[in-house]
Image (tube, rainbow, N blue to C red; front, side):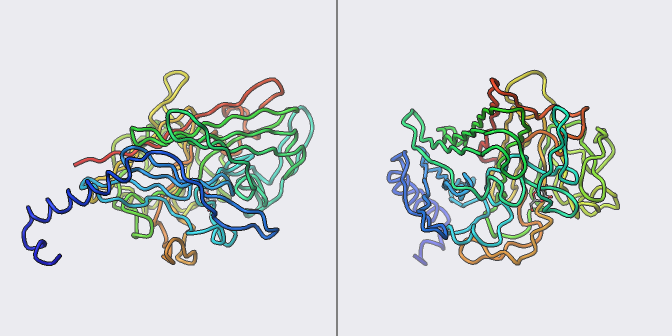
Length: 380
Ligand code: GAL
């Protein structure tokens, strides 16, 4: 429609009309199930597309209980998918840096893959330098979960997985349930629950890679972030917490006010150098139990805003420092260095080896329950 582009008002009217027509179609909130691919043994994997009355859409697959897509509007109503990932299961079965996955049993690192519980030593697979990362070589991100659509007010999908005693070295039969609920307020709520039949350790998180300008649209360094944390847990050269809890004041880790992600990322700071950017656990300012605002991220260009609320004590802020363009994601786009950030709400890395950190132990008779909410909106 070239003649419309010459008139700003006409262009705006046309876009409102088109948005209205699309809106009418997308008002059909609900869940659609489709085939996402097949596992090497032939098992069919599904994609659940959740739609809310505003037209926000979230794709969830039962392979790794992953978030595959989150489609949200910018300040003009233009929709974009703001998480990195692949178009189909095949991509996730290849070289995949945990895109959108539920990570478990233990999110982030356990030093040298060793911990002791009730006087027994446990050994985990080493898959990240000298350490064990994200639950080992066959973590929850690589498991086929059982999915069920929940009939409740909001579109929701439940994913369950039974992790057997000894799987990836962890003790106890662990029953895990993750429920994704898409609310009318453009919030995606994740509820994690788990029970065990033996003392074990557990640290679940979601590993979505966000780019509020849209996945595959380049660097996130001009996007801004606030992290509601007065301290963080510094790491050693192998990215294991030293055990200290340090104030963020006067460091590049002070995100108590909205700050450009790139403002200090290349500072001459040993912590930033160890991780090649941000890849640190922040200690959230909780004033009691329940959800707290962990972080607010803003893309000044599109106006998209992400707020993360959580019951967890920490959040791992990672700026995609290990992305290098070699992974080709949706539509064949190369995902470049620092082209996404993660906000992995969780307990602190390597907690089983740090008695001063909040405990990650789960005992028979207890129910693990954590909640994280990714809420989207726009700013002018
Ligand atoms: C993050 C972790 C990073 C890196 C990434 C996966 O959770 O903090 O160090 O391992 O996962 O590539």
